Every structure is written in C-alpha cells, then in structure tokens.
Length: 93
Image (cartoon, rainbow, N blue to C red):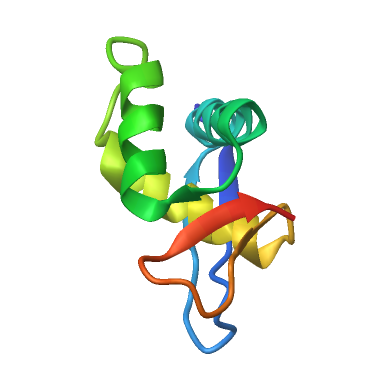
C-alpha cells in the first residue's frame, strides 16, 4: 500500500490533495535541486527544467505533480513567489 502525503494549498480557503509520498519526495527534490542550481525561475521555466530532470524517472503527469507539490512547498514556506513580478517567478524562501 502506498503511503499518502497531504499536499496543502497556500490559499487556506482552498483544499489540498493527498498524493503518494514517494512521488511528492521525488518532485520536491527536483524542484529544490533546480532552484538551488539556477536561482529564481519563472513558473514555466521551472516546470520545463523539472520535467527534463524527471523524464523517464517519474510515473504520472509531471506537470500535475509539479503544480501540486509547488503549491504545497509555498504553503510550507520552502519556496515563494516573488511579489509584483510577471510572469510568476519562483525562488527559494
């Protein structure tokens, strides 16, 4: 049986989801590695970098898990959206 993990949403009015812990950990590590190596990135560039890093190593929709885990990491304060920057830009907290 897969271990589930509660992925939160940074907006408390919105409900998070429960995802497989192993997939959460893999996606979280990929996001952190890319941001540590390259610094702040736009939402789309980070998505493409994570997808490239995990291609062939991840079962499931990489974009869906990327968004879910990114939102959870924002809610937990690990990463943040840079304020007043368009397009959305993500950085380590």
